[in-house]
Length: 319
Ligand code: HEM
Ligand SMILES: *[C@@H]1O[C@H](CO)[C@@H](O)[C@H](O)[C@H]1NC(C)=O
Ligand SMILES: *[C@@H]1O[C@H](CO)[C@@H](O)[C@H](O)[C@H]1NC(C)=O
Image (cartoon, rainbow, N blue to C red):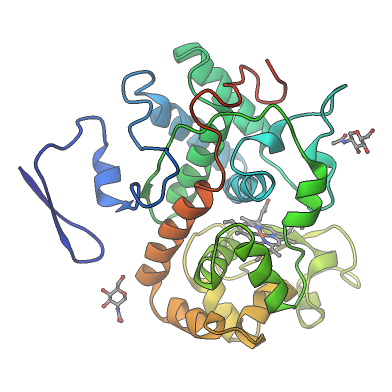
């Protein structure tokens, strides 16, 4: 029997602890059984027990070389999940039968990290051929990137399979634009089964990474060269651009949110958004706890399971 004290201060008593759950995961937040759509954390326990170690080691090197990669991979999971569900549809390249989501408006010249996913997938295929889906690799890479940037860890339900279709139309219609209309952001999240709390917590991912100056709010254009209407990248969180922390929310409180969709979380008419911005700015561990919970929820959007879809050999192409 083992007793664990979680971040929530709850005491969790388990009779049999799975030997393959790493110590780090036991310290992380466990929401794995909450509405997980048939996914479960131990999915690769016997078929590819080393998958998370492979993901972490590739990520470590990639982030060391290009720190922005961590942000790009968290965003990749979001854009995958919001278009047709978390099914790696976002990774498919153009072909005779696929019109790639990479050409959709929210993604073109904007989504990054595809080469890192390719590198992880190649190493995973060497160790466990045709076993681990690209959709799970994207979810693992988003979690690993969060942890390696100083953010929370969580127990991640797995077992997603890969789509045999893509939808640039779904990417265009379902991924929210960075506009200062809180009701539109809430609606976009509600369409995915996510609520206002998920919206605010997940927007906290903007604690790392960059946005093009053309998106930057008028009052923040000073971070951009010239008139700021171009593609120069500006840090979403200029205080700690590569550290996953709660400074994103502190910046918003000071009126320094970079995107219109960031600042409107405080200024817009929502039931709880402004209050949550205040709460997360004041209490980083509460933000981390909710971010972990909301990432699990987002990762459970409409997965393909069982014999649906396929496990792609190459994430960019159908088998
Ligand atoms: C509220 C809805 C959201 C809007 C309107 C939004 C919009 C944007 C925009 C416009 C950019 C900059 C893109 C560019 O300049 O090319 C961006 C970057 C980013 N977004 Fe969001 N986003 C939202 C929610 C999220 C969520 C839910 C996540 C993840 C959980 C996320 C993670 C990121 C990250 C990490 C970056 C930086 C990427 C990089 O540097 O490569 N965003 N977002
Ligand atoms: C894929 O092909 C379509 C149609 O030809 C094109 O509009 C789109 O830009 C292409 N996407 C990419 C990512 O190259
Ligand atoms: C912050 O939130 C945590 C829960 O994650 C709670 O235990 C703690 O008391 C809070 N701290 C403050 C200063 O309110």
